[in-house]
Length: 237
Image (cartoon, rainbow, N blue to C red; front, side):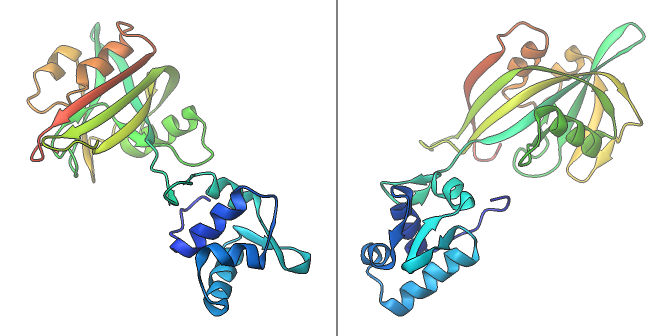
């Protein structure tokens, strides 16, 4: 589903039953929910309206192709949709000026991580390729176009001080962008963009704790896959 729909626990129960059979009868689906016929009719009807379930002949039901994809996300033990990592691109835009290599850094001016500097990034949309996401995000956040090279994959767990569960689970496709063209957007709602050498960026007070790892991936000093845990205080986040 392109836009996730929150569904009732009874509807989740119906989807779970249909996940393990090609099709099922009304009675087979009603029994695990413990609902009266009136209430069950509402919930099975809702799933049909959402095009997650379809009714066949003789009062039998089965998952639609959309329903199969949705139900496959279920944690079948506790009947909840499993949380999954955020998937995004990390854009390292490079240029040469007066014989010096510069990278485009971005200061985040929205929560979380308000005021932190790092590389521009953006979430992938359903159906996009990695380079399509990179091109769209680069245009939206910087006004630039570039050539793209996928430098690697960076997986990060972010923990807040005093918390055992990760606050964020993020997978970044690190994209090296060269030969940039266009007029740079220096400031927009949510961020500030600035060209700097890596050493100049290292002098910034508020940098993501992943700053050096991401930089080394672009410079070829890390492997093409890096997985790390990072920690912030609740005030920093």
